[in-house]
Image (tube, rainbow, N blue to C red; front, side, top):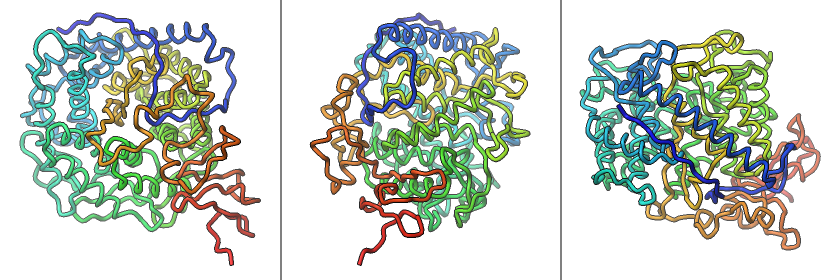
Length: 582
C-alpha cells in the first residue's frame, strides 16, 4: 500500500509565458490582493484544498487501488478505463482489473503540492507493476489525455532535478510505459482518412466491425500528448499520426470555419452538423492554441485564429455561447454545457480578458444558483436540463478561475475559488471520498469519484491559492491538467513572448501594457502610443461587440480584424467589416 507524507510549500510569484497583466479590476473585493491578510487567507485556502485532495487520494488508496477509480459511498472500486466514453458499455472485458488510473492521474498533483516522497513511491510502483498488454477496449481520446498524458508529464517531472528522486535510480520507466502505450494507439489511425477510430483494444488493436463514429475532440485533441511523446523519444510516428488527423479534420471545416460534433473516420463525412464549444468539440479549440505555444508551429496559430473568429461570430450571444449548424451558422441549441466553462481560460491565452471575464461571471452565477454547475442548462428558459442534471466533479470552472486570476490579479477570483471549495466540501464530501452529484436540484449523490477530480479540480483550486510550483517555470497544462514544459528545443521558432526574459511578473503589474501575448507578433502594423503606456492593444483574434445587439454605431465599436490586422469600420447598416474605401 502506498502512503504519503504532507509537505508544505511556500507562496511565490509565478511568471507565466502567456500571462496577460491588466490594470482593470472587473470586480471589487473586501481584501486587496496586496493586503497581508489576503496572503494569510490564501494559505488557509491552499491547506483546505490540500486536505480535500488527500481525502480523495487516501480513500482511493485504501478502497480502490490499484483499480481505476474509487466508489466513495460504497468504499469500493470501478475498473472504469474500459467504460470511459462507452455510454452503451459495449465490449467490456471481464478480465480487465484496472490500470491504477487514479494513481496515474494524481502524479503531477502530488508534485505541485510538494509531496515528492509520495510521487516517488507512486512512480516506482508503476514502473514495477504497470503493463498495457491487456485485453481491454478503451476510448482513444480518454486514454490519451488521462494515461498517456499522465505518464509523459510525470516522466518530465521525475527527470526534473528540482524534484530530487532519491529512493533509487530512475531509468525512464514511465517514458518506456508511455511509448508502449503510444504504439498501441497507432493501429487506430490506420483508416482511409487518417482520422483515428474512437476505440482501440490495447492488446489486439482495432476490433472487427468497430464503429467508425468519433467526435471532433476525439480525433483533434491528441497532438499535445503524442507530440510530446515523439519529442521525448525521437520517434516521430506519434506526432505525425496526430498531426495528420488534425490536418484532415481542419480540411473538413465548413466555409464558415466551423466544425461539426461527430464524424465518420472511414468516409470523412460529418454525422452531426450542429456544433459549439462544449462536449464533443471543446478540447479541439484548446489544443490548437496550446499546440502553437508548446511546439511553435504557425500552422496551429492560423487554424486557431480562424476557428476562434468563427466561434465569436456564430456561437456568441453576449456572454453566452449557443450551438449552431456548421453549414449555415444558424442557432440550433440554446444551452450551456458545463464543459464550456473552459472557454474563458482559452480566451486568456489570446488576451480577450473582458470577454473571458464576462462569460466566466455567467458560469459562476449558474454555479451559485445551484451550488454546483449542472451538466446542461437551458439558456432560453434559464432552467437546468430535464435529464442531464448531474455534476460529476468537473474542473473547467476552477481552471478558468485560475487563469483569470493570473491574468488580472483580481482577488475576486479567489473568492470564487473559495466559494467552489466550500460547495465541494458541503455537497460532495462523504466519508469515503468525494461523490459526484446525480441531480443538482436535490443534491442526490452518485457513487463515483472521477480521476479528473484529483488531476484537475483539486489541482487548479490549489494553484489558484498557491502557485509556487510554477515560479520561474514555463508550462502548458493539457486538457486533463497534466503540465508539459515549453522548451525551445521543441520549437521550430520560439516566439519572443515566451522567452523567460520577456515574461510578465506580478512585480511589474503597474509597468505592463494591457496587451495580447500574440498581438505584437501578429499585428505589428498597429503602433504603440508611447505617451499612453497603458493603452490596450487588442488581441489578434479580438472580435469586439460593444453593444448587446451586436450592431455598431461608430468605427470605434468594431476593433481590429483578426485575419488582416486592419482596423474594421462600421457600415451604414450598422455592421462591422472591412469596407473598400474609394
